[in-house]
Image (cartoon, rainbow, N blue to C red; front, side, top):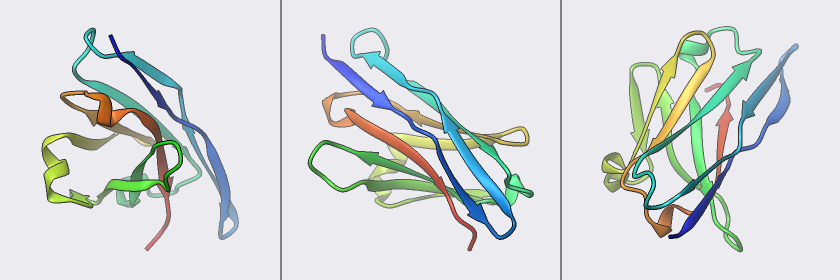
Length: 119
């Protein structure tokens, strides 16, 4: 079996007068036990969360982070169209954005980050 560590971290920064905090819990999975996994990004300090753009990145050792997708009001946009069969994201409630990876394999090993910025 292959252990696929999927690490998620927290980040905080100021946006105007308010501070934005994104929190993620560490998720590790073992391939063979699960073929799909999800992780949440919990946002604090974003006044209109449903209109926010939340971005998801994957980073593997010795490489720069690669953007997978971002979720915007009413749609998900992928960095590569082939990612739409593998990754998905949705917003739940007032401050949770869920990122899902399907058909997990060794290429999914890495650290996953959520990010926010206002357009």
